[in-house]
Length: 281
Ligand code: GLU
Image (cartoon, rainbow, N blue to C red; front, side, top):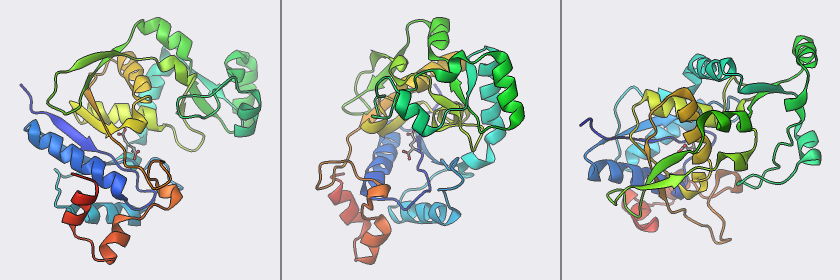
């Protein structure tokens, strides 16, 4: 049987914090337990927020934690054409449609919230006529492309995926995916011809990832990934959702809230052992 392949896939839009350290340590530990390989992937499709200096800092922090990975490291910003190809396959199945709505328009017309608490897309542009679409595209209006979730689900029927836990060695369990709770998700953003969901699915398959280790905050998003794998005919990995580290406010750590970075902790004299202890690993 092929060796298990795992990955840690940070976005270089800031420095790693303790939550990332936990995620990385979980991944390398799972790879060891499964006698597999842990890969590093840099998820930098957001060209405005991701910076090369953050990528450098990530590599340095991970080496400091005594982790290593096979080269070359997969860099998403070098792979836009592949993601666009995958989107085109969905387009050929008539599952993508152009959406010209602004954030404000969506918030105003929204019909509820998605599992992340963001406004659910009300479907406005799903109903545009072909002529209106062509006119707006030709006019150069900013456009994103959404998955018609109802049409997509009609194609695949009931969706299941495999989860392991509480440890990666536990017996796999089958779970139902409910991607409909995300509504018509964006698969090609206004700024780049892809999205987190599309790139992650294309790359997990391209790297032959057998086990995806990720935080519980990405558990619900996995439903979309399973749907995309089915539509694109890609193998679905086994999923392992790990606990999250919470800050004093009870919320998960995040770069945007300025959670202390591994860099800061190192500068304060922390050792890699201190990090392992702090994340109870
Ligand atoms: N790049 C994502 C993040 O930093 C995680 C990737 C994944 O596990 O899908 O949150």
